[in-house]
Image 1 (tube, rainbow, N blue to C red):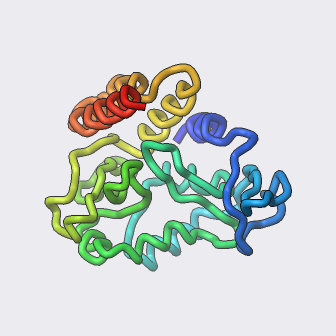
Image 2: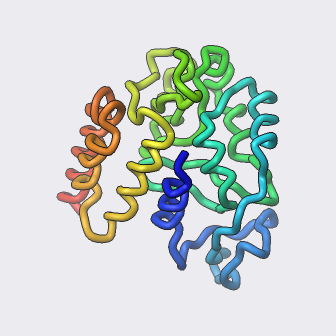
Length: 224
């Protein structure tokens, strides 16, 4: 993956003034403020130091495979939140190494999905279920397409959406664009740009999924 894609994402995502709840697992070097009366503090990014082998250990333990782009993105920094509104990406806490990645093994559907080469790695932003890498078909460099799995289907394939991003790289490009424009443009007006950024994923099989987001966000804005 082009390193600029990763750097652009974190520049768009992390801003001074981002807060999270303090726990005993929070490293002091990531704290940018004192803890307030509500138990929250401002946090900052720090450079990552995990190796590809660290991720390969998780892959072996869980019997999964990550796209190289996902590994390079996740190990670039330590960060304490990954909520990007449309998607909720796994955080990386140096005091709980790769905890969010390993926690997918606790999902009720994982026992059925992983043997079918459908690998949960993040959460969908509307609480539908997990974002998954679909590795059922071989693709170049293992850059698997991204789908949503609805956990109400409890491991049945009927819960699997169409492809919503053609790769993790395209997910980052689309979400970066979304985050960059939120301050000046309504969310539902930004999402159609995904169809151009990722024409073979979001702009093809993923159109119906993203059009549902557009209509939902438009209705919410009109009633708020």
